[in-house]
Length: 185
Image 1 (spheres, rainbow, N blue to C red):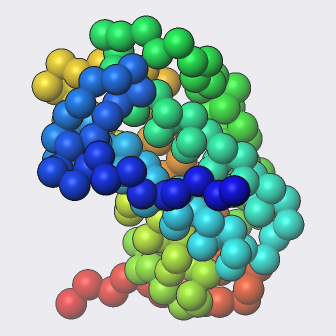
Image 2 (tube, rainbow, N blue to C red):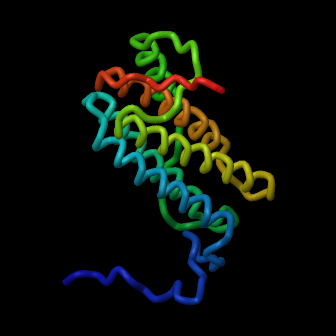
């Protein structure tokens, strides 16, 4: 027997955090973890387009970590959830840094600003990078409003956007797509 996907509990514009707290669906916490979900969907698309098998595996790890971040953001930090919520670790950031360094070693030195484009895989990766930056800004907004957020989340998202930028360049090289140099008027 299948479980119904709809509960009808959100029909009046409210949702429930892990821990039982009801809040409006436009709450900054909901906006933030909804954007994490959007980012995760874009990462799925990037994974589908990425030609490098190793980077596809890294992107699957990223998707897992984004679920961890979303779970953390979906919890009411003032309440005990009664659930084990996985946590983000410093070595998750180290993995991204190592990947950035390894890809950068194979790329030409960047001497100009580059525009997103040149191949759909490159463009999709830049879109994911932009959504990652928006997610990061929403997390900072939460902090500014004194809402609890694990400090490693900001660090991870900052490094993830760097990783996605380098991955876009790396993917362009793998696909023999020319980088589009920005030439200001």
